[in-house]
Length: 109
Image 1 (cartoon, helix red, strand yellow):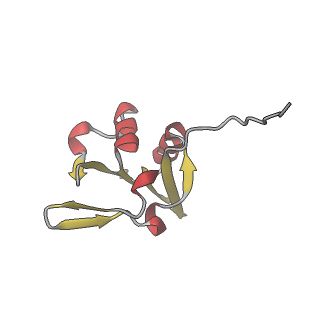
Image 2 (spheres, rainbow, N blue to C red; image 1 turned 90 degrees about the horizontal axis):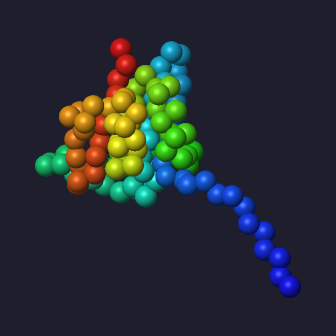
Image 3 (cartoon, rainbow, N blue to C red; image 1 turned 180 degrees about the horizontal axis):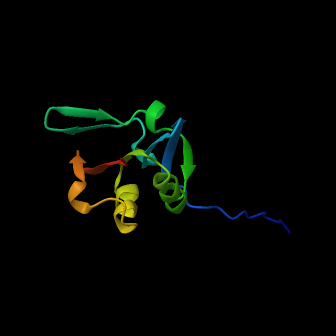
């Protein structure tokens, strides 16, 4: 008889990188499958570069907690942007679309 060990796994949905400098906290978060992709809007190209967006892999709930700590926040992806809208920290009209992918910026002043 074989015994299998099962471990609880959490859903990993978002790559989050946080950089602190003095009072400033920059948070970059994207749906993890977008890392390394290039998105466009008109003549503008945005590369979802792992050196900027790559960081901890978090659940949506953990990612939103990190986003709330940021003074400057950059969000890319359907899951993270929608979660930020649901949490009331991004207004739906503030969202732009790059290659059909939602993108939002938050700046606390």
